[in-house]
Length: 254
Image (cartoon, rainbow, N blue to C red):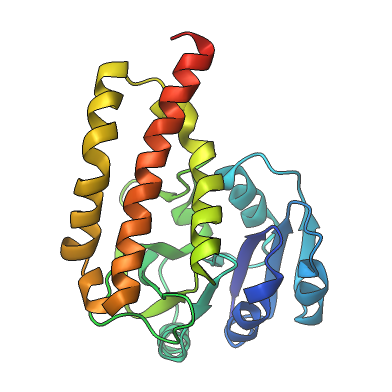
């Protein structure tokens, strides 16, 4: 198929093999943009026939825009290095390309999180639904260091794929806390621009509100004890983000 699949990586050896094995069923143009892995990521990528490029880290959006430019085909599918295309999605995309000449448009894909050690998401999981499959002329990733999303050209048709991607975001509860602790450090700059009084209010309200939002509204109560721990950790880490912003204000005297 005239489809390229691209990923950005940094020390993703634990899950990358599974990701590329599934992706290779859709494309023989697998593009990896790595920012300095030391754990075997590059070897795994090459074993699966991926074309590997090095680029020093400057943010999520910039890395993905660089990866887009390395792709050989006009149809692009973006995956994170811990996201596995399901057999149902492979079948759906194959059918889409075999149906005839596609218009230069975009497709949203459901991204469903898995808890550590699980092989399928919690019942009725609906974590994210974002554009991941798109024609090069329809749009590209925005150059944002943290919030990477595809920005589409005006008038672009956006369709929905039914089958999901499975997101193996965390391999242990320690990994969840460690990963989020590093990620929230990238967000401090924007949050620290908010008034101190607003941050102080959020410091008190963030944890209970985020727990209720994730546990009840996002359905993690259906995930048993793992869903409870996920919602609790998420609420704590969102609160830690506010605390880091307040600390940043104190350091800079704002």
